[in-house]
Length: 137
Image (cartoon, rainbow, N blue to C red; front, side, top):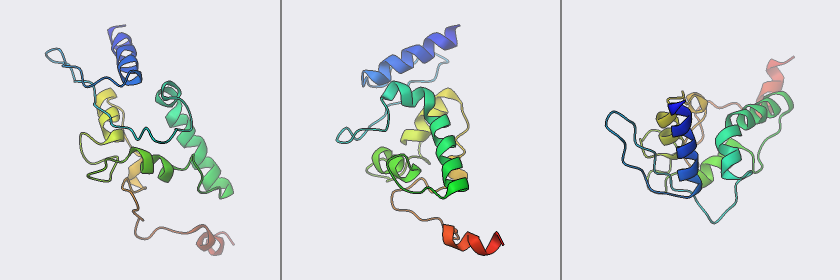
């Protein structure tokens, strides 16, 4: 129950755009997240906090199974808005957008085991959709 209360407090603080809260001794401080407010996300922040993993999973299925690429729901679009403006990444530093939240809630961040978490990065050896047809014969 106390963990649920902390998660609710996190959601309320993030929704209000509050700065990091000083943690109690032995507690992990809330992450400080900077978001590009000049654009709108595909869903409101409270929905994204709860559902982004399912949204990304569904998008992955659409891309892998049906070749749907690009658009506002693509992972590259998420990175464009959420990447740190100095490091140009959403992972690899404790302050990076994705890394900060996943560290806080102790959830494994595995999107970037295959995908690049940097603005404008292209993974070396990436296979274009057209290249797959020769392997599917």
